[in-house]
Length: 440
Image (tube, rainbow, N blue to C red; front, top):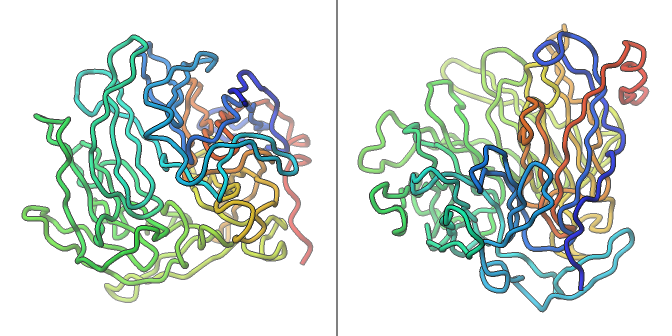
């Protein structure tokens, strides 16, 4: 039997970038990440943070456990480890593959825990845990008992959660996060009743019943048209939020192909022209990372695709390529005021076969956004780690209060925290640390 491996610390490989005035007064800095493996067991494809013991310090949650910050040495169980988080198929067994030894399920097993979130759902002042489940199954929130070691009470929020990149955020602009997903054939969102938060949440469909498959990939939220309202992004276009949500109207679909279905999708002004572009991986179980540049023809919104990493190394300016980008986050990693991309390879998404390069190195990367004087952009890749990858979720968040985002991963290789480190560097040191573009 394999037990959680606490305190495994090492510096991640090759993570070097410049930090700009927002954090370090224009002094170049070498960025690295300190890796801490909290567990080597597979319980979940996601992980997140929250202050679960209300001590003012963020903790980490993945699977049926949470680890108390700031050192994450103390693990506590909040849910049954043999029920809500049992492996989808097959018994738990020890599986050995090159470079990995840990607890996996046989028969290409899956976890019922697809993504983790936190928030004070019942408004009692304590962070609760929300688990978005395996596609087609329930999502539940776990009520913080306000201390102690007892298991937390489970409350089913929604009985069917579809799409492989559902999320929990404020879609409607009312200040209260909602579960945003597909369910029973439609996209929409689920809201809790603030007076009865333990009751099932109310489902609001925003699309017709288009019979969206439960395993549909690619979904996100962002203000595409700049009207101040969040829209829903999916692989086949974007759904425009109307002025009023009274009566649950159907949102307007603007069709556009954003790949065959990747992971989390984002609306962000990549090139600084005042229009929000779309950032997405192109195929969750294949290749491709791209941004779609928004432009206007009259009042019509259109997009130009810029794929900057694909199947061949030559398709990336720096020779980087990896498959199965099943989790993406967007955050300003280096403090230069521009948001960067965090992603990686999902390890054994469908087991040791059936996907491109399932046994390839499970890498974790961040791509630094650079706006060039000629109005072009570049995404410079920096490897964070080569022995973790991502799950269906990767979270970038400042967990220690130093204003530098850290990274949290939960997947078949375990649970990991990558704490960002910054070291002032001379201009020469910084120059030597940058990835080298391929020769034309």
